[in-house]
Amino acid sequence: MAKHSHAQWSSRMTFVLAAAGSAVGLGNIWRFSYLVGDSGGAAFVLVYLACVALVGMPILLSEWMIGRRGQQNPIDSMVTLAKQSGVSKSWALIGFSGILAGFLILSFYSVIGGWSLNYTLNAVTGTFTGQDADSIGDIFSNMLASPGTLLLWHSAFMLLVVGIVARGVTQGIESAVRSMMPALVILMLILAGYGMTTGHFGEALGFMFSPDWGALDGGVVLAAMGQAFFTLSLGMGIMMAYGSYLGEDVNLLSTARTVIIIDTAIALLAGLAIFPIVFANGMSAGEGPGLIFVTLPIAFGNMTGGIVLGLMFFLLLTFAALTSAISLLEPTVEMLEERTGLSRLTATVISGGAVWLLGVAALLSFNLWSEVLFLGLNIFDLLDTFTAKILLPLTGLGAIVFVAWCLKRQSVEKELGLSSTGIRVWNIIGRYIAPIGVIAVFIAGFI
Image (tube, rainbow, N blue to C red; front, side, top):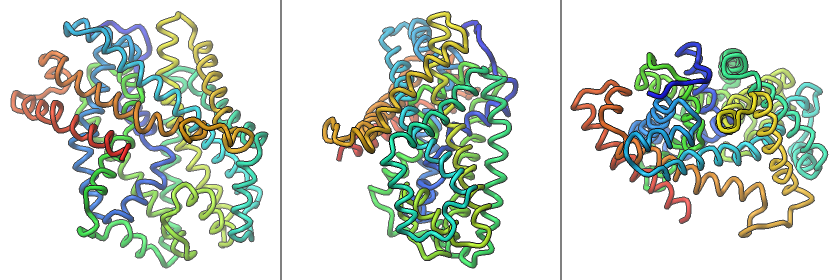
């Protein structure tokens, strides 16, 4: 294994919190639960868990292996391992595409993180109190229509991200996730507890966990596979970068199981926190992003204790956004640090500044640049579509194919601690099942 010259996680638990924090993002707070309710309840959960085991976990392990064995940024780790394996250095493109994906995603993700910060302030000041659906809708529309408002909150969010990442792995990322992840879980438990008092908790349980086997079809299976892939922050360079800070004493298989359990549990808990409130107010659960920024504020504005509950919810949303955002910036910072010799602070400021600038273009697509289209998409949607449909699946596919087909068997055995039977099972999943699953998701994105 290459000698590392950069930081290491202080413990397995902080690594688990960081990896889980990256996985638990804005999409988890509403998208997973919505998919569960709309796609067969418990039946969908079982399919999702199978997809995690057969597609998500193998790619997660592959990215961690690349990072830990390379002990460098994703590009240089791929170069080192390709050289050791006697294959082309062109595999470094996998590391580059992952870093690029994380960079592009953060540019528009920060804009949404800014929305969350803005709504946290709105909740504190009682802006939602007594408002009807039209008024809440106007608050959201007016925010999108104001370049100044979006710029202010996008900038504030990126300053928080840069401030955390600039402090380094142990002082910055670890300190942040050690406080934000427990706070996130506590806030969600409080909100779920409130949901039990609404009289609609049973309805939420039925919505999410009552199996409807008839709802399962090819589309639902693909949705479950896509969610399994994207929820674990795969294909973004994150897990390769995080893996490069990982010591040899950490068992990858058991750690992957822990991260997946935490990620899935928090996603389900989010549903139990959100949907009782939605149903108690006679609202639709299938609103997508509008559920967060339009539907729920109506409920918070018209319920007893709504100011406190709204504040807790949008704080929760902001914590989830921040733990994901710091992980999205880290691969670019690590690459700049190691390839240019820049200090941690300088590399972070340059990376964050570039992300911020692209984010400005993304936020202007809601107002001043709304008519600037590429392939029929505005800048925000183009960034989202290009990363989700192309970069993420191709990077994840490249990682699993490289590890399963190119990395030496002894290296895989050492990293995973598998027996000869375990290696045979790994080869079947890594060489055939997982790649086929990713290819299916990739093709489905264009149908």
